[in-house]
Length: 79
Image 1 (cartoon, rainbow, N blue to C red):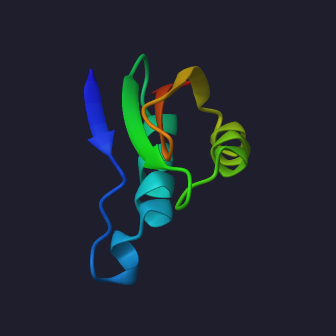
Image 2: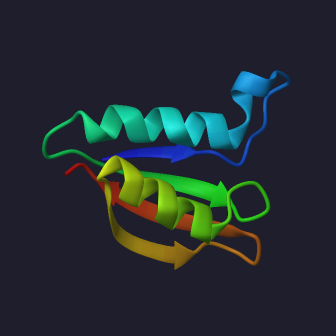
């Protein structure tokens, strides 16, 4: 299973974690039987945002856990 850390910010606006997250969701929503795990900073991508956008893309949240006081690990699955 692929693990993607979205806590690292790039210099450009297309490297922002929210942009990367939405691109991942688009790709995952087009896949079949695929799961990925993402690591996110809640300061960059709040859990409510994750819930809303995964639902809009038809992606399922399989598991969520706290990595540390500021970060979450979220396991996502294609529809």
